[in-house]
Image (cartoon, rainbow, N blue to C red; front, side, top):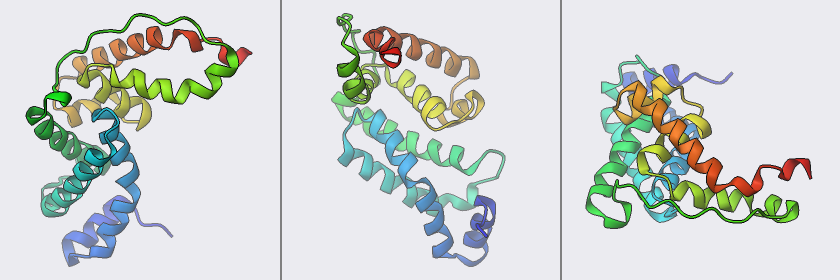
Length: 183
């Protein structure tokens, strides 16, 4: 029988059970690393470093977790704060808008199938960081808008707006893929 996050957290807090925390890391390392890689515009090394810092901080601060949100929400909040700290220092990660690229011509169905994943990754890089974070949290990681607002420490309406704007920009950027499934 698999233990819940709450059970594992209780074991860590009551017995400093490193194995229980290791299980939490195993459950969440891939989603946290993927989230950070998307925020860092594909920089896997930076994402790995930030994920490591996220889990170290989670271990040290686990006693502050109150259980009012899912553990994953709390963890993504730590990850986002780690990213923001680095982004303030690195110009290439600046939390500024990027210029929207011109629309590209439509691709053939065969090209679309093979390039969709790569182009989605590139299209996500072109979103404003707040839009990218909201899209990745809600659409890739399954957080609700309310949970994403907690992670991003911003109003619920802002998250909803960022998801909507991000989806519209992605739709425009990936316009050539709209009919690839029907081919």
